[in-house]
Structures are given as C-alpha cells and as structure tokens.
Amino acid sequence: MEILVLNKLMKFSPDRIGREMLSDKPEMRIALMCLEPGQELTPHKAPLRLMMYVVEGKGSFTVGDETVEAAEKTCILCDPMTPHGFKADKGSRLVVMAVVTPVE
Picture 1 (tube, rainbow, N blue to C red):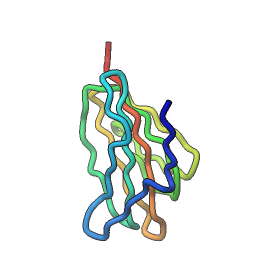
Picture 2 (cartoon, rainbow, N blue to C red):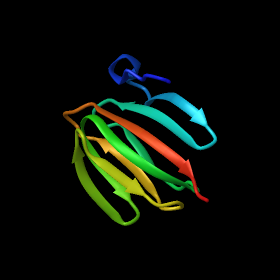
Picture 3 (cartoon, rainbow, N blue to C red):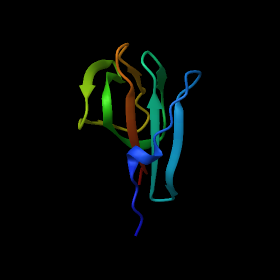
Picture 4 (tube, rainbow, N blue to C red):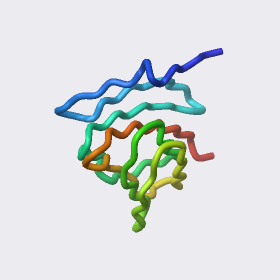
C-alpha cells in the first residue's frame, strides 16, 4: 500500500511548473503539477489515456479543440494522442494530479 498526502507533496516555483512524479509503474503513472497564477502547460500529445484531476485552484483546460474552465474536484479525461494542456487562472494557484495509463 502507498499513501499519497497531496498537500505535503505540492511544490510551487515562480519560474516553472512544479512537477512531482508520485508513482511510476508500467500500468499507471501519477504526476502532481503545481502552477502559480498564469503559468501554463502548453498543449501536447501522448500515446496514453489521461485523467487530469483538479486538486486545488482553478484554470482553463484544453483537450483537442475544446477549452473548459475547471475548479477543484473536477476530472477531465483525455483519449490517447489528443492534444491537452492547462493554464492556471491569473488569480489562483492550480494543482493538477495527472494519472496516465497505457493504451492496450
């Protein structure tokens, strides 16, 4: 068993997105990304299934051609090879837990 206490793992940086790999196993990877207001993870593609879970704050999330606003306790799902990214609102830090699984 592993227990991840997310508020103890959050690390912010004014220069770049804070990234922590929480678990890196072949069947599932979990990363925690911490963004200061206005910071952005530009849209990119990956050959994996992805769930982005908003742990804290709010921001805009891009999946494919759509952009949505999301706040705490929201999950956004993304199919493989679909562009995805997110940006913290100007007045809010954003913490996103990303869970990726391989495509079978």
